[in-house]
Length: 185
Image (cartoon, rainbow, N blue to C red):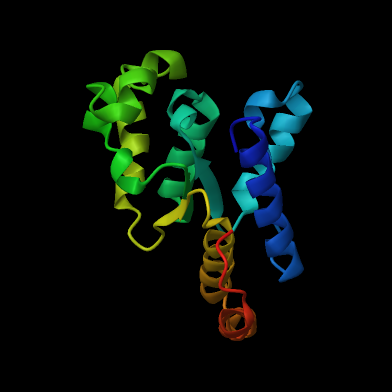
């Protein structure tokens, strides 16, 4: 997690709560805001033992050295679960970011590895890792947070072998679909 904007914080807390409710332990940390080395060490130990690494990707994630490190770390372990927050996977192409292509990257793009403080190739490899994650194409856009969170919990439960959680969520979705009011949110 990188950022302090209220919608991002709200989404991450909701996701964490949903995972915990269904018996999936999780750890949330914005390592960029850790003020001392003890907190960083704790976060790194949690990353080491994690079965999956959920990384919430925002426009500003590509400037953050901790996010780039997390992308490299979890993609190396083949347990990266990226959630695109107000982005889509197709927005996160290295070429588009560097060359400032498109509306999104005109302002936020460019040579972000300078801001990241690392080498260009390391940065490119980390961002390319996102495109290699085929199974997890989770997008949290305005209006679909609940669907994204439930899909994340369902996919993680299935991968962790907790079929009862996935079945419970499937039944709940069917029930809500029938009972939900037809008004827009």
